[in-house]
Image (cartoon, rainbow, N blue to C red; front, side, top):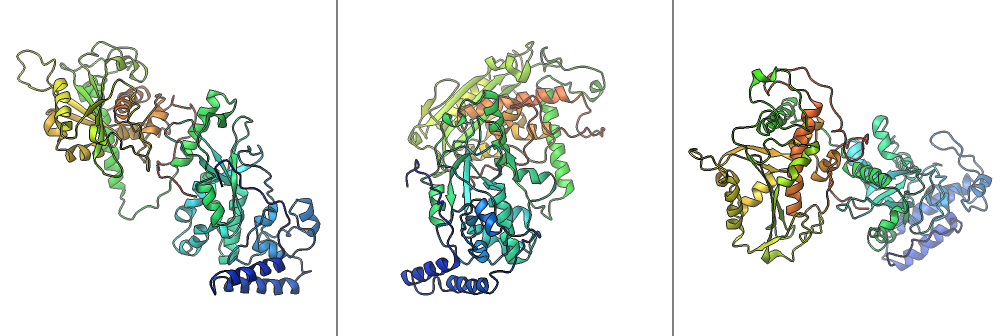
Length: 580
């Protein structure tokens, strides 16, 4: 099936148990001996029970009566006679919309719990505004995130072969974020609730959508006419599941957004980032409050030192008690005698060979910005930043695509420079030496300027640079601070988890494009740390330096004024691609 073909909906009536048993007998003859024996035995047992209880009224687990013969006709289930409530049990979800066209394997015997949902859409058709959706990611991770240790191993097999117990209708949505080219998948929340009912009936447990604030993560409504989930297809066996994962998976196109406004598209992009960032971790016994407290204090100290080095705060605990206001539209009040050099570094390594293929460098000499107001998010300083993008000639054709989408040929801030693998180390040294030895006052004993090393999750950059023989701290000399955009943003938001660079930029309201290009990542990381320092000054009044006890502020959930003002904060970053 090509990607343009739909997984057609079968509007025929669901098969009776007699028909199911007959199909199983045919399959038992066609496939290796014993493969369908147990399933056939179950079907025949259900058939006997059905005949014995044909006229006996049935109720669901919640106490509601199962759909009657007439109700089934009215709801479009396609059941033209009393066709066997047990058959409906076995094909729960499929019978509800009349789409069952394959035989389920080893179905649990349950009573009622039939879905009333009817899907009559073709490939790419937009969902009705009344539908409520659950991100597939929440379904996929439900066993590990929401089922306890006792029931987890029992329920996990149901989730591993979810398509064997009911039909699932998949929908998709796209984000405008260029870093998220694959669609985000959804299923109707009603189908997931149905699925939990099947498991509960089989295992005699009580799985539900979690109550409280987590409940909202399983129920999303899209009421705007311009942007709604589009129908991808129906999964009811391994074959259709594979079609959803490969042939039927659409490629990004702006046509998905129709005539939606730019604000609506941004709102959707934020929502999809939120959905993909949700992650729940069970607390580990060895994670102590003391460890978290130390990490939080380290981030606070890092922010304080960075603001001092930028001239935003005095490096004097006594002076901190004096009243002063920070104004981003005025020059820094406490500049250092000799400004530091901010050096932002990013290294892209190929996912296959593990060797660096790109190095990005962004440099800001704060001596040049003395007397110049930083402006909102540091926008007045951007013109003083110099950018470098080095590409390793031998690996020019190596582009990451498995875990991230690399774009080495899309440097936004100038022209990329190709160097050989042999010359990469010397080229980096030459660039950094130029900036760390310039503008030193005459008569000074210093031979190198003090620097602030900047990165996002900077340990990775250190690791890759060491791989080519470059020790940052030894080579650059006077390192006053290592400012990590992940740490500074985490301090700014008082959140317990660090964020990806994408999320940091979104939250700060910094426009970006073509991430996972080393030159671009270095540039945007430098912008991000400056913006974090400014926003922290704006939303937090001058406080004591780290180590002095002060009254705790109310936790700020978002940095404010970011990508979509008022949007909810993300729960936790997770860049993994979730399979169907």
